[in-house]
Image (tube, rainbow, N blue to C red; front, side, top):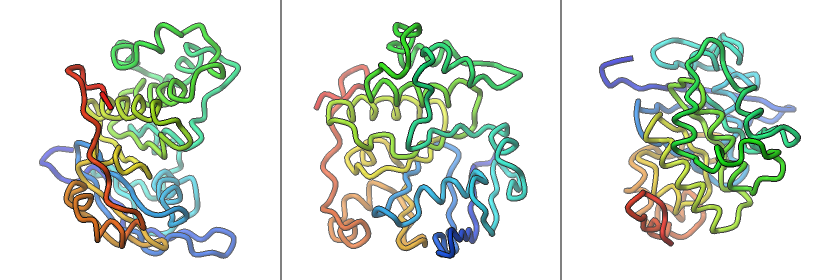
Length: 250
């Protein structure tokens, strides 16, 4: 797509799961660059929204990606259009090595961007022969992001990359997301507002299965009353400073 139109459009997405109306007309757009963060309290439908975009759950409504209506396409066809998905549970194969995890993610035909992955995450190159299940939580998250970057994707969808990680590892993952976003637009589902403040340009907020706010992420996070109203938390702390290589120094 050219001309600065939205990369991704969701229109009136509705999802029912076991009789519950989980998504109730979710509508938003995502620009062609930067990070758009999908925010909301636990249980409001963020992960379901991601799965609806990818056709992983039955839904009604319309999804347009890169100018093409993909609503009726199966998930495998949607992915081959250039969407990389990093699920909340990461989805790595613990018994396989780092190199094997990357190799099975190769989409044919290439190109496969190993040089980019090893430039962004040199730890993965150093640990290529190590079983993925023995990596730290942060390293596993980098592997999951690396797999999504391996193919020439137009969009990365990253779901809760810092969930359950120690603060030091959160900073490593924040670095990974920020660096990945320099290469490809990212739709980021995240609860850590300090991370959102650091990397996100735009924010979409869900509540009870509906979009209740869209707009610039910095403006939202600077408004303590609005953050408390929409997310039930205090205003996000300032983003950690970064060193000259872009790494967090907090």
